[in-house]
Length: 317
Image 1 (tube, rainbow, N blue to C red):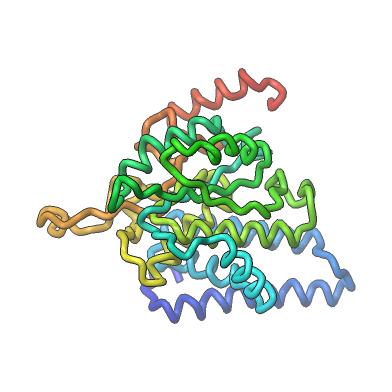
Image 2: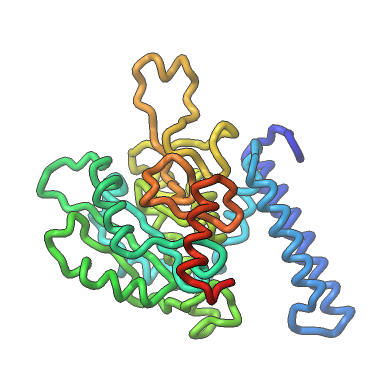
């Protein structure tokens, strides 16, 4: 499929075929080995599939990787009904995507070795200094929504002071029933896996309701949110009008904030340049005080930041 132009319907068929082949292989192995749980071979297959998906997402002219994510995350009838019920209770009917900002904060184990993380107050500076001024509010009296999600209960507790501060420019929208498992590693989840799955899918759905979403794309789950948004999932599909940017190979791995996919002729004609919905704090090009660095980041700034990170946390070495 490399470098092959494909229609959306063909992408879905290809995605289903790939995932179907993987599932049939796992089922066959389990039947032959009489194992009900996933074996080392199953996990190896998962690791190989994930590696392929990450490599494919670096430059994906066909959009295949995004279609696979959409296919993998389809809820069955039970979960679909459950998600609809909980989201109906969470999302206010007057929510306007153009006036909503998503902020997904990854904490807990991610902040040890795999990623640097910002203090919570810095995230609040980010949405106040960068996100809020970019909104086109119809009236000064309109208080925009901040859709905040996190797996870390410490982060959520730090947000309570801002949630109760009516002078803060945003009104918070959070999932009070989120189980906040406290880790990205399944064996360390604080509660049952099903609750974590439901909370994660609700978080994904909430961010699909925002006009711009700030992410830590060092996190696999946040990278999935970014891919879904770039696959044109979300509020635009439901008829809400605000600018989307379809990412192109000219963008960085997770998308460049200031580059767009409009042709030079369109840009020079005075057309409005849309900003991407998914905005990764791990990308270059934003103020350094808001920058998050992944363990695999190679630029000098991130190298220096990780040296400082380990000096301040010697137990991580």
